[in-house]
Length: 533
Image: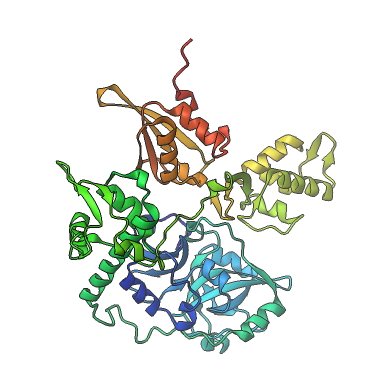
């Protein structure tokens, strides 16, 4: 289902009411494993077969998905790897995996019933599939839909048993951007874990696409208005610095109020009784203890905040509870990310590498390791002819050469050319992101706007763990030039930064000295103005 790329149609964060409904759809034993304070987003996607699905991510890592019109939530591999006791997990032989990789359903005879524990599940339940090989259990490598119940399979019924929906290294697995390999345990440990697992029953009976309970609109609005007030006070007390006054009302709302919003809460100003943030300020200024903020009106817009009544009781007595009063330290605070080159094992080279090492399709190897494995194979098969290598049938098939021998370097180059060049970005926080779309880089562009004004465009800084707001602030301090952020832009990963004037020289130097970004990862430095002699 996810072996081919899919189109993302919509990405939204779950509101409080939607979060409650989501958790209500999961059995208690599943929902209890999830962090309710995580940021939850859902993505609507359309596959190449025009199937519509929804992916639910916790802190950007996909954990569940479901088909449109279906009530059953299926776990992703990321979830079942972290929670191996949560869902039924069956075993198959490695030879059977070949058929699944080619799109076939798992037939009942392919389920191992004489090795390991016997999982229990009903028709329509999510089921994980792991591989038994050489005394070890690897996986799960697949998540699927049970076509037959466990009783029917173990009772000897033939036919299709499990329909695979999601597998290791498909596009859903890559959607999280986190490098993870399937766990490998001994059969004894797998059996012990299964014996500790309660019987899994994920029945769809009783579930309805309709809402279980009517939503109390007034209660939700009151909750949102309380959140707005608390974030407003938190923004004043903890985020607004006196030297930032005066500050535009809209800028204050975006930088100070919304920045304090807890991850599990939401503010939609239009759904409150105020409708506009300016109206909220007018109402809050009617407090019996006097005004909180003084707003100077402009000809257009909501004006700017010029003064704060820091002695106001609402501000002095406010204590943050779950409000975010300071930003988390990003990767740039402790150094630049490390960008490493790898080659992903592909089907053409897998037979060669498996002769000398236990590798799997998609496994990442650096160039030195690839060279060592090829050398080991040549020596093992006694194909070394000093400066050249004798081609046996396997090497001849990989290289496509009709000759009897090939030079060492030519052999290495052909082998790596058959593999997928991959970049792994390792952030100081420990997060890793895999890229198979080319080497990451920060891109400079200089555009000419109306009145012959120059504007410097900086793309892709978020890929390197740079916070756009902090970055803009450093630019404004360094060159006293306005820097703005565009959250979505063409050919840019993450927010795009625009700076007035041709500031390539300053910004390029800032990236290299302050953030430690190597020059080879920056494009467009040649656009800087030439020094006049």
